[in-house]
Image (tube, rainbow, N blue to C red):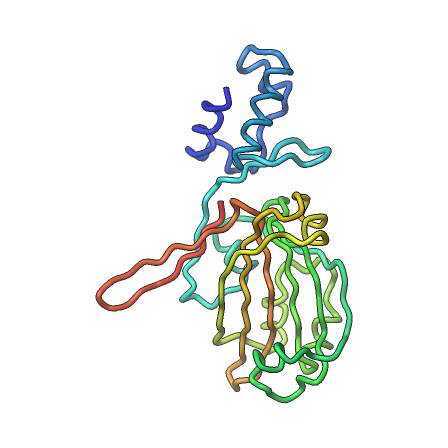
Length: 238
């Protein structure tokens, strides 16, 4: 049963909702007991194909989506372009002095003495996929503070107010989930997370935001496509 469900997931059978059918439905479909269903699902969870969500069943972790990093689009803009529903919810928001790292990443520009730090949970089709920590310089902070805590696209909201992202930088590495990240993302402490550090700039060179995005395991990967003319970097969720 676990093998068959894994094949069906790989074939995209559950991409529309991101959820497996209920355990009762699977038991009837495979003509087995609920205990057999639970054993199969636990095995699949250990293999990273699915993840339990309290009160909502089992989430699929292997539906693949991609984005070219040559395109300057935010997480929410990219998700919407692929027909998915992006979500975001602010957990904490506070003004604080900028760190030395943030000043360096912001190229030491104007208004970097203080930043607005916002911590959000990001989701796709209702499934939490990423913990986002973003620092905004003081010239951007008042705009962000006016937004709803559930604003799905901060970049889109900034663009509607005349602030457009035109360039950016990103670095990628893997980390072990600290206790707080593990709690917020619903995984075990020290679980592997893929971290994307990013900074974006406006047309006049001023920094707009610096972010630290931490994706759930088996949710995000990167693919580089090369040619004689150059290369492009692709983001994959799955």
